[in-house]
Image (cartoon, rainbow, N blue to C red; front, side, top):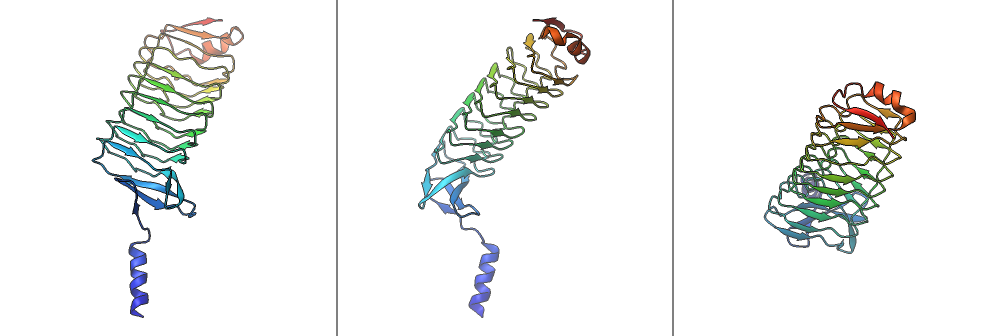
Length: 261
C-alpha cells in the first residue's frame, strides 16, 4: 500500500520527465508520443544546434518560451524535422542576428521572435501561419522575405521594427491586418501585390519615411486610418476605376495626393 501511495505522489508532482541530449537543450515527449519538443535551452550558451532526433523520435517543435531571454545566443541551427515554432520561443534573444527557418516549418506562433536582435530573416514557402506580434519590436530588423504560403499578415506582426527598410510581400497575401507595419519608421518602400483585398486600420500607422505607395486593383476594403500619421506620404496611387472610392476612404490623409494609374 505504501508503494502505491508513493508512486501516486511522485506521478502527481512529477508527471513529465525532462530529458537532456545535446548540451544545453532539454526535451519533453509530446502528448501524442510521436516526437519530442525543445522545452528549454541553456541561457549561457552562445551557439546551439538542435538535433533532428532524440531517443529514436523526431524533434518536431520548439516549445513555448524555450529560448526566451537567452541574451547570449548568437547562433542556433534548427533541423528539418521541426514543424512548429511556438510562442515566445526566441523572445528577447537580443544577440540573435539571423536565423535559418527550415522548409519543414509550417507555423510560427505569436511573439516567437519579438524583441529579438534579428537583422534579417527569410520565411520559407512551407510556412502558412505566422501569429500576431511575431516580430514585434525587432528594432535591428532591416530585411525580411516572406514565402508564398502566407495569406494573412496578422496584427502587429512587424510593429515597431523601426529599421525595416523593405519587405517582400508575396502574391499569396490577401489581408494586411491591424498594426502590421505600425511605427516602422525606416520603411521607405513597399509593394502591395495584386491579390491583397483588405488593409486594416493602422496597418501603416506612423510609417514616417514612406513617401509613396501603390494600392492594387484587388483591394476592396481599406480602413480610413490605414495610413494615419504617415507624414511624408505624398503620393498614393490607385486604380482609375476606383478613384472616388479611395478618395472617400482616404479623406483623412490630408498630406497625401491621390493619383491614378
